[in-house]
Image (cartoon, rainbow, N blue to C red; front, side):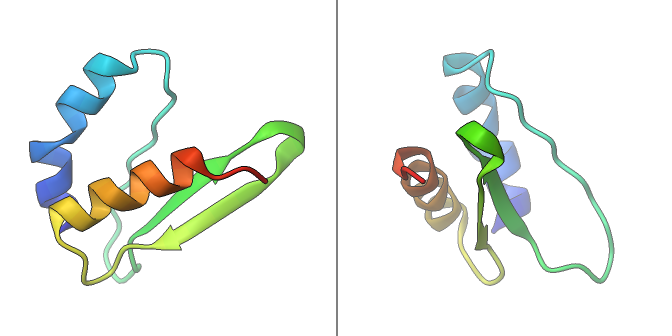
Length: 68
């Protein structure tokens, strides 16, 4: 899911949003999560375990539209 998202969707996402800061870390034994940081230090996260690449892309879209 997440690895496939990185190879399938990340390049076009980054090309469309070159100033979007993205940090990808690989670590064994840790569940994948998507974090977003908004104005005034507010953060939100979404667990990505068990998602397909397309579901991860949808989660990125949802968290990008979220207002905190």
